[in-house]
Image 1 (tube, rainbow, N blue to C red):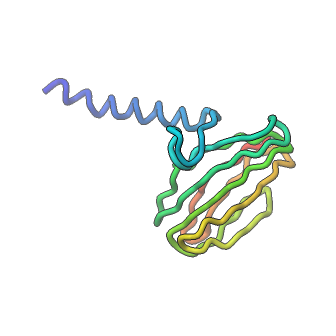
Image 2 (tube, rainbow, N blue to C red):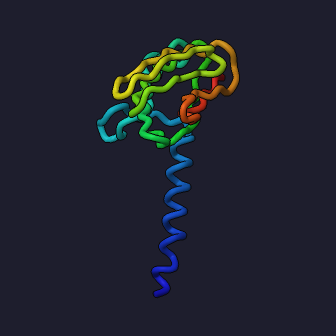
Image 3 (cartoon, helix red, strand yellow):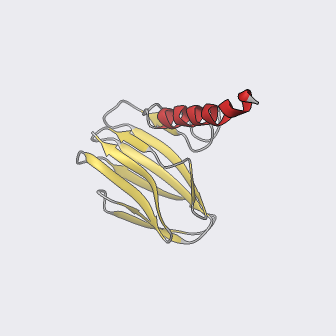
Length: 135
């Protein structure tokens, strides 16, 4: 019986460890290769490089879970968003908007020009997909 009391604590520790890993800024392969779908991948050197991230919206669920993506000044984030419903996508600080068509991937190219932390969100429903930290 005592062993079962420890299970909720173990689940919380694992969840926190996973959340810390997501926000550590480490890069994971996109779309397979052991890193899981929706990871961040990068090509090129730090400044002038391109990071790629695939995000899926299903109802009010965002996959991967919203996290912060570090982007060096001068680098580009290529964000591919697929939603199960029509919506509008907005990247604050980059002043970029795009229409999401249900079931079709929409790609935004966000180039970090000004340092800051910016949200990328949908409008209906209002969901934060990620934050981009331009440094």
